Image 1 (cartoon, rainbow, N blue to C red):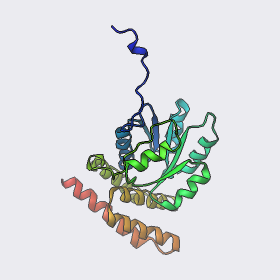
Image 2: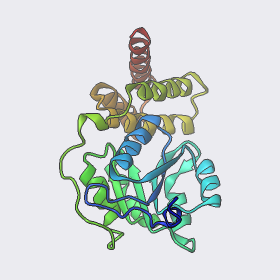
Image 3: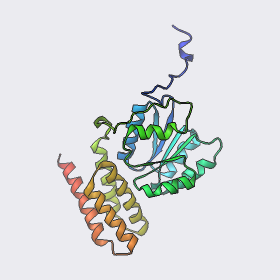
Image 4: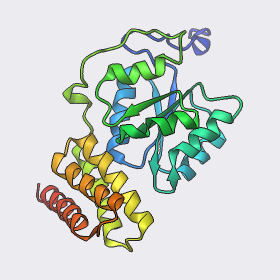
Amino acid sequence: MDEIAPFAAAPLPTAARPFLGLTLLVVEDSRYASEAVRLLCLKSGARIRRADSLRTARRHLAVYRPVVLLVDLGLPDGTGAALIAEMAEARPRIPVLLGMSGDPARAREAASAGADGFLEKPIGSLAAFQAAVLNRLPDRARACYDEAAPEDLRPDPALYRDDLAHAAEIIGGEMEEASLAYLVQFLSGLAESAGDAPLSEAAAALAEARRSGRPAGSPLARVAGLVQERLTERAAI
């Protein structure tokens, strides 16, 4: 037996897998969106852990410190900006803090909280994902892909159904203002990530009704109908 092998150095990063040896914690309530990030990490060589809420993320962070923390700004128990702000002040600081949202206007919110960068969902390419991390890690290999994410990096469609079922539960519950606000941001990001244009447009109409103070009944019914339609279609497959 080679007595040196157990103490060999960890594999060095390469141009093709620049994240070898890195651990990334993604805080994302959508299983579909977090699976998209997992596939990008797998391609890049990183280890990934997932939390679906601020509470779960804080439990993770009490045990270990990832090199990269990627936080969705809209979470079921609060805004991801609060967690970014906490981690920006913590010592030792996590080397790479990134915000993420389907709404590009929230990039300023992430930056104000102390994020090092912002990724708009859906993440359009492996290059954009890798560059967001490598820009904060100058000692790492900087060669990245620059093509759109290929077909084999798309998440399992079954996870989209799981997220739609979660949305249906929210719609079927007591629709208070906080629940409606969360539903809008959750479905907007989900539909964008999945390339579901009709649902994205319906979620945008619901968001506009809320912003303008108009009754949300009709746009909410449209959203509910599309969600149920997609759940029925997938159940029949």
